Length: 161
Ligand code: HEC
Image (cartoon, rainbow, N blue to C red; front, side, top):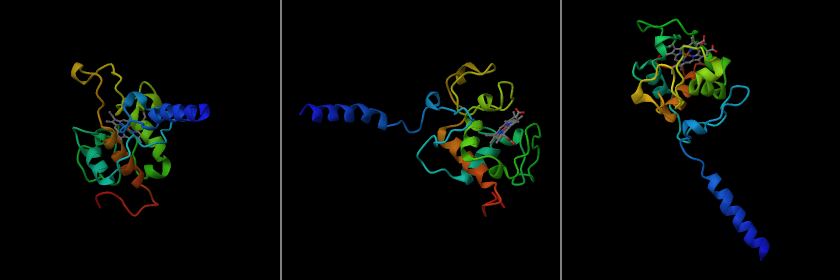
């Protein structure tokens, strides 16, 4: 009897932890010592095409302000401050890409000009109305991770072409 009660208690207690929040809020995201985030931030399926939209959208990722790749090479006003992202899916795993996007400052260095897209921590130039808000949602981060991973010689998908 005692054992049974104990088991029920354990079940109830751990049950609380099992219901992880979906999406994972920024303050609960953990970057491992080797700069990875293994688990997707949401259980919703990502879409690389939406990721491409976010990549080029000035109001969302605006990645093209600093990065180019063969997929967007025809666009005007591409930035070259950041490294070219051709075949980035072959160089970095999803877990590594996710970590860079979530918190570039933690992975690339505190001085990087690349924004941290999924942290609620205020930067030194954060406007008051953006304090506590992330630039991208969990779903948008996952869409961009899926897009960047698709820039790989292993996939048939190469974006807009
Ligand atoms: C304001 C400029 C800027 C913006 C905007 C920006 N980045 Fe970056 N990014 C950089 C710089 C610069 C680096 C190289 C690290 C450094 O020098 O700080 C970098 C590094 C990276 C890397 C690692 C590349 C490698 O070869 O290891 C990835 C991946 C990346 N960025 C993806 C993105 C994506 C995706 C977006 C949009 C959601 C984005 N960046 C937006 C400036 C930017």
